Image (cartoon, rainbow, N blue to C red; front, side, top):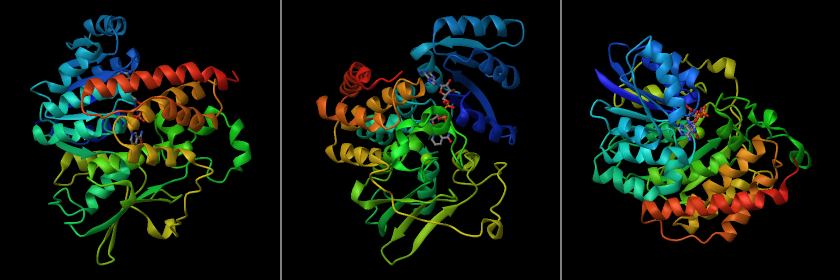
Length: 393
Ligand code: NAD
Ligand code: MG
């Protein structure tokens, strides 16, 4: 049996992971499940899965979960950052699904990497913040890093199985990241200032948590993914093209020197990349149905309009600037998205706040975790101070 720990078990990716695991009870043993403040959600998952450990983000939630579980099942309940790191490095956790959203996922994900685990990486923000440190830690500790993000999982599938870490050596000319364009692809740009959080979260193809849904609507998600791809595949932004593909069936492509372009296709359902990473290098069922090509009929592709989606360029610039600029970008975006979701910031002010923060907060080398966390904190402080100036709540 392979022991699996799921960081962020109550979220969209966490629930999809449990759905896949439920199809293979003879293969996987759930070791630990974690959640932020959703006591009821984690309680129900603990009843069903009876993990050894469960972690809530704070002591109060942990206490409430403990009380509810006491009468039912024997689960050790832990709390906070220490609890997350403890389960991430636990000897029984062979695989760690990193599915916490945002910067909160960085430390436990990095702990799993340093413990040499197979890390199934959904938490792209961790890599955006600390790419160099993260990838160095993967190498030093012989961790297995498998991308869950559908685009990166697709690229991983289209690269040679013995990919050396050097695209050129492997005959790759470029990577093409596909983007759905989100819910506002066709909305007149002049109307974007008044779109609501509910509209932004109504993604046409994917069901996801609220933060990544807003990121998809601004296309900051593709910006974060561009940075993620640079680190995962050891390349730079000029070797990665982003194209809009509204159907979300071609999950990304790799173009080789001879002109061959390999793509990975499938229905937009995260259980495919999750099952791939759980079974790699073999394959197993995921519950996702096959692609009915005649019903699909056509696949469309279009260029990204930088005026509609300024966040993509901001992310590209931050990656090109290097160092802690991507941590600053990520932190400012998290603050902006949270305020947008709380109706305190207009949708179109998200890129404005991110850009101002990037201009104002000094970046530096991202050569220590302390430096990355300091950049994250400085950017959050700055963005929170400035957010009031754009406030319309
Ligand atoms: P979600 O909001 O549905 O779930 C987030 C999970 O993290 C929940 O279990 C929540 O309890 C936990 N969490 C949130 N804040 C926390 C904190 N401060 N401390 C501890 N735990 C915390 O999000 P999601 O859609 O499942 O996305 C998770 C990650 O996967 C994100 O980084 C996202 O970018 C990435 N991702 C998601 C999808 C998708 O289809 N949902 C696709 C690609 C990548
Ligand atoms: Mg993605």
